[in-house]
Length: 67
Image (cartoon, rainbow, N blue to C red; front, side, top):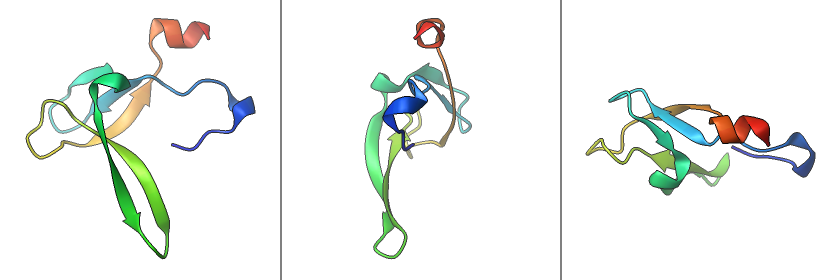
């Protein structure tokens, strides 16, 4: 997720559609995906799924909403 300084805070809760895990993004490892033609980006890895899961949704925690 790319963010400009004026856009405000990013959602801080990650959701895995593979196992339905929901937790703070700090619990997720990260990896880099992409290719040289389209560029590279950082993805979050599910801490529960053995294959990395599918973190494909995010939301704000109560504290994140207040920021």
